[in-house]
Image 1 (cartoon, rainbow, N blue to C red):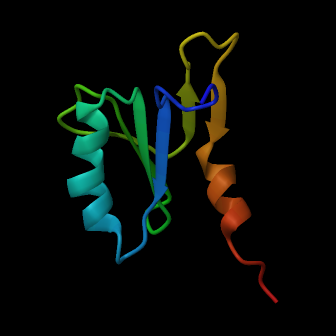
Image 2 (cartoon, rainbow, N blue to C red):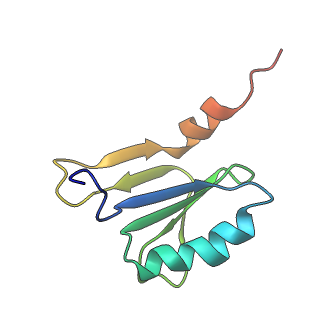
Image 3 (spheres, rainbow, N blue to C red):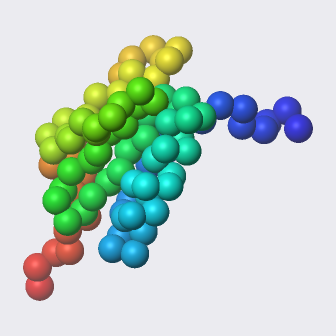
Length: 93
C-alpha cells in the first residue's frame, strides 16, 4: 500500500499506573532500537513529559515547554506543558 507508514517520527504514551513499567521498560527500548526520533512518556502524576531519543541513556524531563523540530518541518512544534496539563485538570464544581 502506498500509505503504509515506513518510519515513525514520534511516539507518545500517556502512562497509567498499570502501563508505566511496560511503557518504560519494554516499549522505550523498542522505539530506541528502531531509531524513532522521539519517544515521549506523558506522566500526569508529575505533570512532566519524559523525552527520549534513540541514543539516550536517561530522558530529558520537560515540565514547562517542549520544543520538537521534526525532520523536514518548516518550523518547530511547541507544546506548553503547563497549559497542557492544566487543560486536562477537571474543573472544580
